[in-house]
Picture 1 (cartoon, one colour):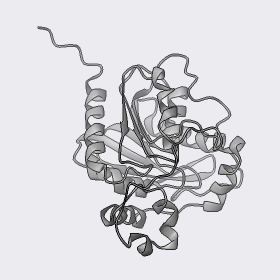
Picture 2 (cartoon, one colour):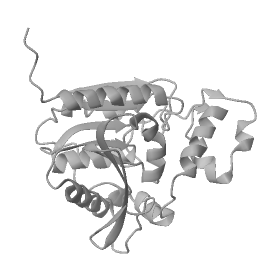
Picture 3 (cartoon, helix red, strand yellow):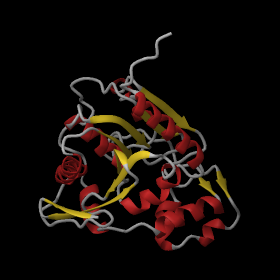
Length: 278
């Protein structure tokens, strides 16, 4: 589906019916690629309308000539959320860069967000100030590197579990993803002043006291895991996990991640229910 926001035709996908859950992809990702991943675990979940969004320059949403920084990208994403919800409450899930935008939504619309899930989220957007572990490969099946195409090499280099199973899943998601505008994204990402929002998404007026799930990866050399711990006091109702044997792509962790997301959605659904009396 598409809708026009500030003269930009924004692409989004909708799955299911019920309460609204917005899902925001990582930098360079897409709604289709994210849905190819997460719908494996969410399609059984009744009562939730999942809306996957392509920010400008991602997937099916073009990069308008007037967009030159993260503030302008975020403003379009937020305007789309406002348009699709009409002031109603919603939950939000962001992966990597999408987690950065999700925290921006909490900052701007704290009373409307019912719950947040952050998957290997960007915490510090500046490329030079993040705390990340060194790159490490834990498992590499013989000969697999020779099977990787030039188009796959950047993502393959993020993998710490390099098995044929993990590579097949990466390809399945990539086959359903749209590339977006790589030149536009590069111009923004290579300048930290443009890639970072001009305001601190984590300087909340008060803690976000609704159900949260924060999943990090111990061997994630892209965004790390230590910086996420620094924002924990913003989320007094958060489950926080550091997964071993996991890089930024969370390869071969789908079953566990889907179980954790299920439990988080349970908490969102029951958050405002009165306690049972003895």
